Length: 202
Length: 73
Image (tube, rainbow over the protein chains, first blue to last red):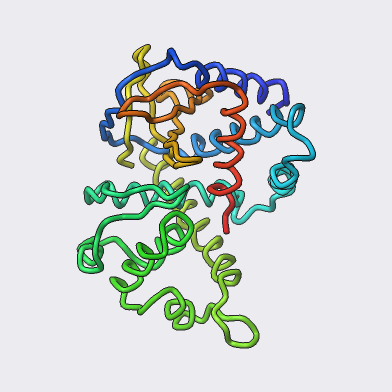
């Protein structure tokens, strides 16, 4: 997508978002949708467009943001998916599972969700397995993550990492090694989801 | 996938892509369910979705979101 197209998306989002006269009730309705990976890609494109839009006004004071932008541009792919596609997909996959079981009671702490459920309640979610754990790690609070770890039979995240061999050369639990494994595993899940979707469309 | 939707004041039906808090405010990121290029950021005040104050707020909020949420690790 060209920069002028990204700028258009950014400008439109800006126009949509700014103005205190814009007002409506925050009433959620849950619906089942066919969540195409293409839509996720577009979310990422939008983020890129924001960077493009920000470059003009934000420079030295937002160096971290600019660096993120560069990382985005140079991002490698895993099984054809970028890190950002994988990250977005696995977050939405987690929310989808929790919403399917009406696990929608949470408070926000920044971008972290603190879900108000117990280990026993998480155990009731049949599909919940280790492939969801990384999304819990990045999107939820430590208390939520620990409750989920316990529901999967681990004392905590450290014990999960040790039991599954996600350790560094010294044998210490390693998030980085887990992250690399998770990226490959999630890309396979996405590939299968995409194939299932394509088969359904035929 | 089961996803949360919300209807805007102009009747656009939007998918809630994400929710987060920043500087004591709660924000949501929406995408128009009929137009994938149509993104919206709103602030939640008293159970209402309100437009942001200005472009400065829009940029700050989105940079915060990008830096904290979209990083994979």
